Length: 139
Image (cartoon, rainbow, N blue to C red; front, side, top):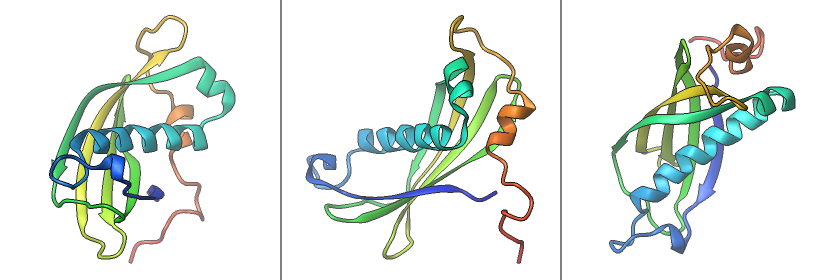
């Protein structure tokens, strides 16, 4: 599955007292790219009828990022079952391709009006599956 990607540049307000990216900022970036991926793929109608909430984040920090580093953020859906979905987010130093952060977040799908969990339908799963001919070929 082709990941959804974006690139950011570390700014001064992203840093902590040790002058590397604050752990809280990584969580924000994980949530930001997740929301951007949903909004880029899901229809307006789908976005108005359902919402996603975080059940848990599992984050592994592999390396530090510093001021002016360019970071490539990639995300994809690893699994969906019932009302939950597991999203993977990885962040790399764009220059060195070194993995900085790897995360798995479990999300729960809710009905927007009742706020009750609902099963992830095939239609919703299909939002994140590349159409045949558009997916990268195996090597």
